[in-house]
Image (cartoon, rainbow, N blue to C red; front, side):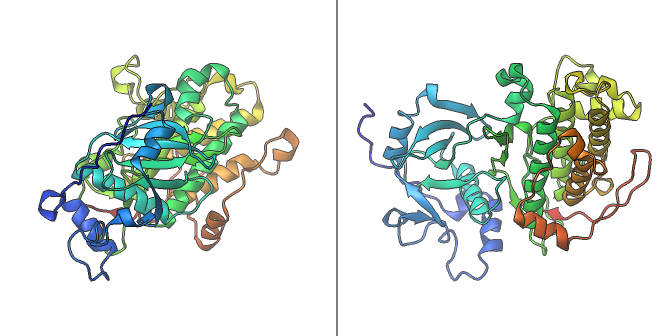
Length: 398
């Protein structure tokens, strides 16, 4: 059915053909290694002889070709900027999502290695789990993840699943908290996600969050502060200061998360060409409505805004938090830890949650420990107050 697998084509990768960013990545994180050049990725001991690559299990191309029915279009879960994702089922019964990168070149190899390196160092219940990958010698670069069955947040807000109207306000505030939980954990682990958006927030059947897609993510070592990187990300979620200065920081994720918050309260897409030209981006639309205090023009009325006092309080507070996240200057934005703490306070509602039936979202033990060790700046009560945020951390790659 699938045909015989052809002999794998070995990619001849040498430092002179690769992007300086990958060389710098290798230098930073393997300083103690005695191996030279790209031997940290492709050692003399061929990875085909090993059951693991960079610490994760290796799947053969033929096996993944079989479980996806030869990458049948009917098994497609979605497409991203770097590859197509297919649903499959392994021999041991695990359902998986197999991401097939579009091309075999040095840039794709960098993203392939980068995503493996990021995910193998992280353990958090709100981050997607990487099960394994293909060999570097396979016909395609493939990454194998746990399958998350309930689609993306984007699909539930704006796509085919939106017609079911399953995202009530209690579910949405939990999604916001769990996503902030995951991003705070990433930042505490010296990682910037770099592509925070509703399409990268996966949901299970209980609407628990799994943040995905770490191909653009970056480590930001404390000894690196002012090396620039070409802006990458998704239109509508772009940090404007990063776009102008080419300097990526943890506050870039905060800006993108502000757009996600605006989507959660409005049910509007991040980019809509049918809106006025200066409000095509939801960030601009939301900022204008919040500054004018016309929350009724921003918040989705189906959530209970204006009819439910507690929903009105919470959505208004989340809108003001989004306003802080969407500040054009990074130093005016809160940290991700500030955002998480504020969301928890909004959800808590002065001890009212038990009376109205809102369930407080539990934190990951990792994040709880981080929060206990972190000193939080105090955020203002309204968007018109002044606030002081801690210094952002810069991430810089060539």
